[in-house]
Length: 307
Length: 251
Image 1 (tube, rainbow over the protein chains, first blue to last red):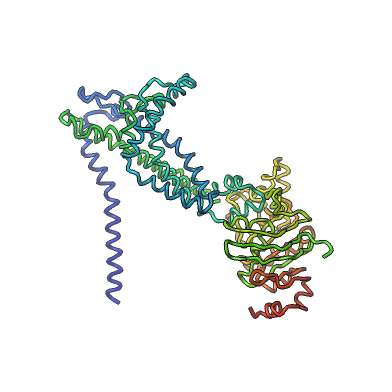
Image 2 (cartoon, chains in turn purple, green):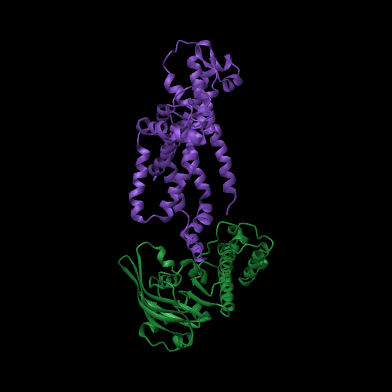
């Protein structure tokens, strides 16, 4: 009896310790980033670091603005592409597909999640970039080019759009599989109730299933966003990596992650360079943090409407 | 029967390999309460849901035979299933309020079918909440979430919601089984009131409830129709040995 309760206590202590230390790691990483970024944070005013767009490490100018905007552009466009597509897919799988179709499609989509990001990047270089260079950019530039957002002055294909498409594909399986689970957890009684009133399947989905599943859908999107923010490899391979502020989806960009991955370990003799890159890491961490807090606030507001 | 509202001819339902309903032929009287009784798993709910084509939702279901509602074969390929379900309302075993306000729950059906004007909607909602005996309890909080109501109130809300599409038939799948005795009694009284205007079909496993409510009884056993007839005959002079055994509580 004694050993049984002893084991029980031991187990709970051990699990507490493991849980505690893994959550501690977040703080350790933040602390390490801050410690290494301190030189540049003390040398330069924060406003200049964030809002200056001149990036000339040799001259001692470190403006993160283009990189921060690069991250925001690529992430935002990726989510604009992937949210509607993945939600429609999840709805189809949960509400319309037969068990046979679902049995084939679901594992394939889950497989997408397991493809290494460098492979996505290669595929982006081989397929997405040429497609944009040869077809999408010229076509849209000609027809919609008068809108700055679609003007196609960059002729390489390495662009915000390429990065966003690749990123959207990587976020796809995450949103789909979480959202599909959420849709399927909506009780069948609700479906029957709305169909029994003479609703069509689409009316049922639109007015009842989506509404009931909304908090979970928001959670799925947040999960996708978090992944999109931090993804490095695939994006850096197709996004062009030019330190400029994009104004069109066909412009190149240079996200924070790509900046760090491309430059860390090189030219480290330049004063403050290493500190600046770690500062970029810190900014990225803060952006993800802000986003998560915002998402939590939204989620809480959605959940409060306890329909 | 002089004037059946629903007549069922050689109805068979298969769930994949399972033969759930075996060659049912029966007629259901208009503006009366028909009770479908029988032990669990005998096909009561399957039969009920085949009357508004909800059985079709289960994957791998095969249906043969005919179900005529006022002479219209509801399984005919030309028939619009949403039109059928508008004519035949359903009250399910547990209340499932839709994720919206009390008002919107009742207005849901009418809106689906094209009712728009604010005043018309207001009137429909009030009328049907009254008919379901819920109006006085909710008239001051029509825009509160329906999920805040008690289970018994939710079931009456579901009744109001079903009535609001103005069906001719009302199906009830053990509509009181998830409720406390008071709420159950409330629903039963409503059903008795409503049979003046509606043909009502309920599934129940409570024999006493069938005795209290039913004008006509259908007894199913293992997917087969054993016996059916007016309630008085059915309970007082059952013809079949299996019916007598069931009525005596021997199943």
